Image (cartoon, rainbow, N blue to C red; front, side, top):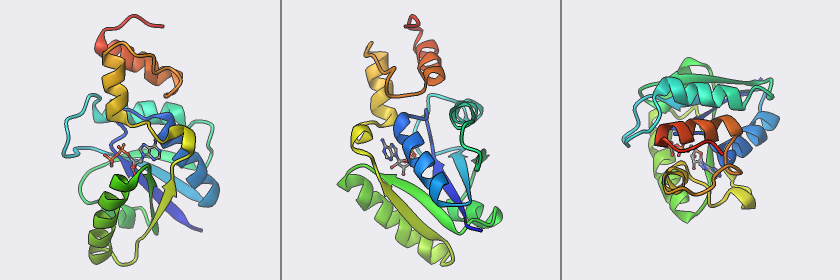
Length: 162
Ligand code: ADP
């Protein structure tokens, strides 16, 4: 049985993240989406909110569960007995960052393998940060995230519900 983790900040979860989660869940026996507690970037949603938004988004995938984590990603993978770390790639700058992290992770935990999924064309331009920016400025992001995430974003920005 191959268990994989899909780590990220997910601030908030987008359709791009869900595309990767769906595809990874089809490939591995069990997928744990792990929500990083304190990334080195400022966040809009609390860990609890990010976990809840993600949980609501993946109820239709039976072999997926969602958990918060803190500390080293590879240590979390070892703790839950996952052999595979899943990440998504949108563009060459993602590749450079992932490549660097992968080499460090390999040094720290040689038993963990990285599997990167190329983004699907329709999600290539979606990032949580750009999405928040567009939403704050009144852009319609409703087809880029699940409905409950659009509602949560509108609430955060004090925008009228569409
Ligand atoms: P992190 O802060 O760890 O980069 P993110 O929540 O931004 O966390 O992203 C988690 C993972 O999902 C990363 O591997 C990122 O490249 C990937 N990802 C984000 N958006 C997309 C997308 N639209 N298509 C494919 N992969 C994506």
